Every structure is written in structure tokens, then in C-alpha cells.
Length: 162
Image 1 (cartoon, rainbow, N blue to C red):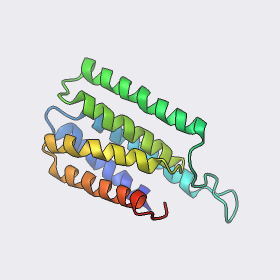
Image 2: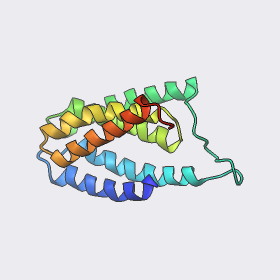
Image 3: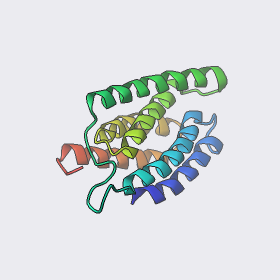
Image 4: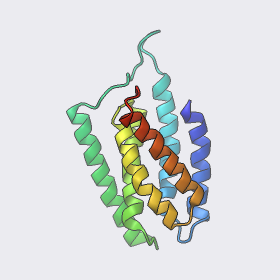
């Protein structure tokens, strides 16, 4: 299962983004704290069952309401994170850092709720994260996001079951 290893990974990533980059990728650092919380929440949701054969949160597409909420969630967090980065930090990549973070916040929310749209949000986030991490000189993270992009895109575009 992805959640236990993800929890370890986000703790390490938060450290790298905050302490190993100059200036730090503040939003990505905090994003990994959010990932940690959502990983615990998602792990809990993914194992909850109504009965022996039915999950409490079945894998499904978002309803129109959930999709609208998710897009609003993304836009709200993009604006908030951007303003925080501009006003309170010395970030030199506030637009991209906030864009990656807001799309990943949305993707993680949908993933924890077992919504199929999480894949599309992850692909979008990875496409932005690749050049951002490359620019910051974080080559292992760049490679990781390329692999995530390849995996997420392959699942969607090759018609594999989600």
C-alpha cells in the first residue's frame, strides 16, 4: 500500500525542501506536512468497510458538486499560497511553487476520498513540479516527478484500470 511508504517519504521530502534548498521551497515544505496528515486520513479511509465486500468510500468519479468543490479548492489554495509566498517569504518561484502545491493539495484530497480525478490532478501537478525541481537543482526530485508523471499518465492514457 502506498500510504505507509508515502508517510516516510513526505517527512524526508519536507526536510529537503525546507533545509536543503536556498531559498527554501516553502510551499512544497508545508505541502509535505499536509501530505503527512492526508496520508494518515487517506489510509484510514481506504481501509474502512461498510461490510465484508463494500468499502465506505468506493472508488468513483466526482459528482458535479465534488468536482466544482475540488476546482474551487484548487483556485482558493493557489491564491492563498501565492499571497503567503509573496508577502511572507523570500521565495523566488512563488507562482510555480503555489501552483504545484495547490494542485497537489487537490489531488491528495481526491485520492484520500477515492476519487478518480485525483490522477488528472497529479498529472497536472507533476508537469509543473518537474521544471520547478530542475530549476532548484533537485535532480532526484525531478527524476521522481518524471517517473510519477510517466506512471500517472500511463494509467490514464493506456487505458489501465484505475
